[in-house]
Length: 449
Image (cartoon, rainbow, N blue to C red; front, side, top):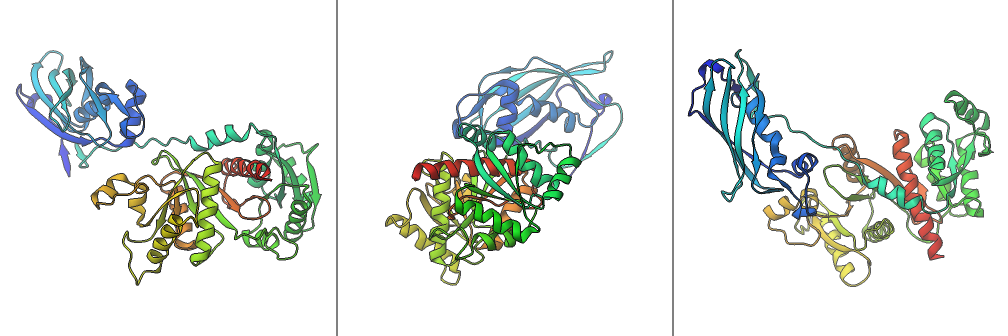
């Protein structure tokens, strides 16, 4: 839709404008930064004056529109704004001043119950040239707040560093990520790979490796074998992927005679910090198990629950994902979901609350769940998403990273030691987050021993 602005000469006292705005979670965060807030979760609210950006954007984008300046105001708060409130912002021109080329308007903001939550006069300098705005709503501001890994790092840094075999750290990010994790007190790195190449990369980025143990290996295959051997001997208590391919490292780790199998099925978990979600979100399995059957999904789910509890989620809510939220005999993932939930009821999966099948929107959006009439302790507030197969999981995790601005940490569970399984595309920040998660798992394992 195209909005044409209104010039000063065309404005008359008595002219009115009204628009509506549904308050989103990101609005509450923004308004709270301006005016403070109280409560938490669904009860979090902000003083109505915190919504000043809505009043300003109404004048500058709609009435009088493009080219306007909000010059002053005497707005006052009369109430609180909650997420999902339907606000009505109404403006009425009360005075027009020819000398200053300003107009005074009475501003009034009501919620869906007709309660006036903010009101007062504002002074606007209308535009003097005709311009168009080509949108139905003004651009929305998205706040990308990352807090999950900050809290996990603070928790992990309370423990001694974990001796960690870093496999083939032969590029900038993998080497620097390991060294930054060491600097943060999360790991004691044992660098396993071509010594000359590792030293050369360190010199190129100006890092002194004095005091850092290096175990020489001619190539990445040998590096993976030697790193796994360090973990088997107990010299290393965790394994961290460097710049080699995942299959190459996992082949060594999963070798039936010389690897790190522990009698359990191994699975991968992405721990994700999604700014739009507001809580840690675990996605499994997106990297190891290609097309898991029901038995594999039991172990995948249990591994994720165990990790969530280690991270501080006492009773994680687990959504078993499918394309629909009803059991459908021609869609195997819905049958698996129903069976997993019943197995949890019978104590075959412990420590979490399961529900499924759930579609993705129902799992993470309370509004979507309510719209579809789903009553569930998991729907809209899942801590763990169990995907049907590796393709769905891999695409979901990467979409959240690239489209939703999520940070992620990747870890493999179920082996003798935790395995940090980052992508070769991961930056130092992501590797540091993975190291923090790994450190918490490693220390929890020591307690279990």
